[in-house]
Image 1: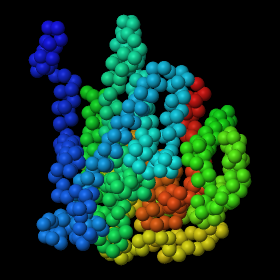
Image 2 (image 1 turned 120 degrees about the horizontal axis):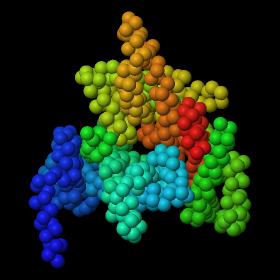
Image 3 (image 1 turned 180 degrees about the vertical axis):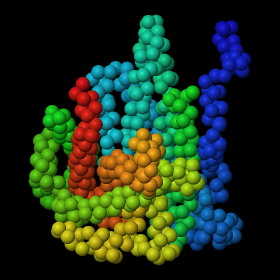
Image 4 (image 1 turned 120 degrees about the vertical axis):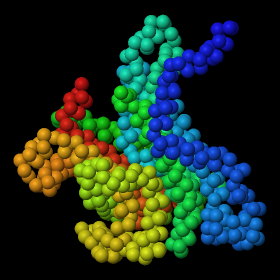
Amino acid sequence: MSITTAGPAAAPAAAAKVETPFQRFVSEFAASKLALFGLAVFTMIALIAIFAPWIAPQNPYDLAQLDIMDGRLEPGARSGDGTMTYWLGTDDQGRDMLSGIMYGLRISLTVGAGSALIACVVGASLGLLAAYAGGRTDSAIMRLVDLQLSFPAILAALMILAFLGKGILNVVIALVLVEWAYYARTVRGSALVERRREYIEAAHCLALPTRRIIFRHLLPNCLPPLIVVMTMQVARAIALEATLSFLGLGVPITEPSLGLLIANGYEYMLSGKYWISFYPGIALLITIVSINLVGDHLRDVLNPRLKK
Amino acid sequence: MTVFLLRRLLQAIGVVFAMSVLVFIGVYAIGDPVEILISPDADQIERERAIEALGLNLPLWRQYLVFLGNALQGDLGRSFVFNEPALQLILQRMPATLELAFGAMFIAILLGLPLGLYAGLRPNSIGSKVIMAGSILGFSLPTFWVGLMLIMVFAVQLGWLPSTGRGETVEVLGMRWSFLTWNGLQHLLMPAFNLALFKISLVIRLTRAGVRETVLMDYVKFARAKGLSPSRVTFVHVFKNILIPVVTVVGLELGSTIAFSVVTESVFAWPGMGKLIIDSINVLDRPVIVAYLMMIVLMFITINLIVDVTYSVLDPRVRLESKA
């Protein structure tokens, strides 16, 4: 008992002298101002998405708060009853675009991050299995990966949604089925290298159960490339979801993500009412670019080939 | 080589069959085939006749054989909306999509090569930094939103270009093309540029990387030492050597360009295959969906086969690896 309680207390003391890999990673990541900026922007976006119901000027889906007379107002216009200013204008239903974007971010981020996470679990498990089992299992899984990757993501997602129909859950399923292959290939690649290392051999010699070797020894050492792929795939998933929703195949009209907001503004575009599509697009763009900035730098930091 | 070719061909045929089973399961097993394949407007007698004619009372594996047999004869059902054979409907739209895809590839090369060349020759100049930042933006910008913004600026506000549609077309070789008329060309420019955006970034990056590697080669140093003019070194010795890999990659991207035209066609109301499939999904015109999916699978497998074979011709290591 005394040993277990001493563990956590002793760890920080030791870490103060010797730099842990995690601290090295943090200081290397912080070296890039652009990546830090990306992380700051993304954190802000995530916070806006999480706290949207409390900070948005209006609940855009509470019909009692909407006034159809305020429809298609320009950015900066005041509402008919003079109680609030629509900083980014309103859509055809008289919804405040700023609030719409905040709520839309929630859906876009949830779908993007959720599908990336599920795809990561599915893909990483299959990748580990392929690397560890080898032989037929390996070639069967990798054949499937090759097949998946030979079709452009948008096409594969289109096929899946053509069968399943729209809906948030179906979009997530489609995104997972489209993306798992990237994780599987990445994990298999690094697991094949790690498998031949001495520590795995040592674990075998200790007669540890296979499951423990895979998840406690092999998996943690395959994590760095997996994290990089995951960051990039979150951005890709958000963009793909927006595209599918724009095409009318994604989220339902009751749960509008950024893509659907942009689609709603499409018909008003031609009459010069740009803001209904413009601002949700800017929000989408900022989200994707901030994630990509972080991911781009993570790739450099976590790439062992670039280590001095 | 012949063995390699045959093996890849057999694999490709295998994949087509696997996909046909998947599409079949998607349409016949997940959904109710009676609802999917028979128009909802049909009355009871028509429905029973159609069930008989389509063989929907047969066991599932027999149904698959009927579906496969019809598909092999090019019969993928009739569209509910247009009341035309689905395959014919798709083939009619194909020239518009191909025109758009090739237009996009052309623009990508036309803009990407010179910009990439400049960025590769002067990697530290401000111009190249702007170009590279622009190419990152090209990767990050959502295509459909850029399309909307292009319409907004060039069609609505400036009024320089038409916003949607295909414009005037001319019939050549039994198909309608719009790039042969001035009006059609104006209609083509914006969608093609929109579709090209991602590829422009790709070509810039490929060209830049190629140039930066090539200028360090001994033969380039030798050409300079020989006293050749800088423009001759650049355009004959450097440019010619990077052109082959760049053009190869761009050619290989044709498939994904055709796939992404789904988005661009929807934004610009371009009447191609992509717009047709989106419209069909939205009105549940299932025979067209099935026909499109089978067509596109076939097309991709053909493109992938050509890519693999081209690679194995260019790089013998691929052949040797697959033998081992």
